[in-house]
Length: 118
Image 1 (spheres, rainbow, N blue to C red):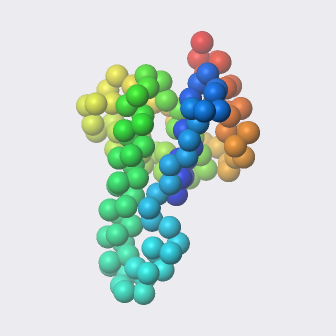
Image 2 (image 1 turned 60 degrees about the horizontal axis):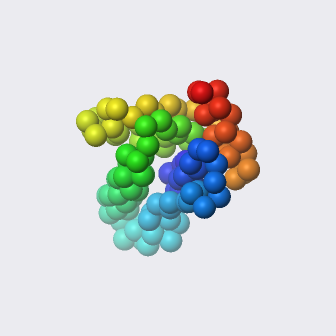
């Protein structure tokens, strides 16, 4: 995951259970907001980032064991938000720093992590 998209890969791996969630704050939104004011852009970005993290949280609530990985600090930001919410107390969440990965590398990362958990 990063600040723009989160790839959900369910273990055991089944192609039909994998999906991608995108943040609403993209380069077009950023440019439109920047044209108006920096303060407005920051507020809009913060609001849309919170909505993005809420959507990811809704998905995470479906699981008991979750691996958050990716090249940015977005996973840590999300983790800190989730840990403040009692709804996530019973979910084991692990963070793993990775480089930017292809879809196949992401799937391999998930397989390796969960196979080693068994």
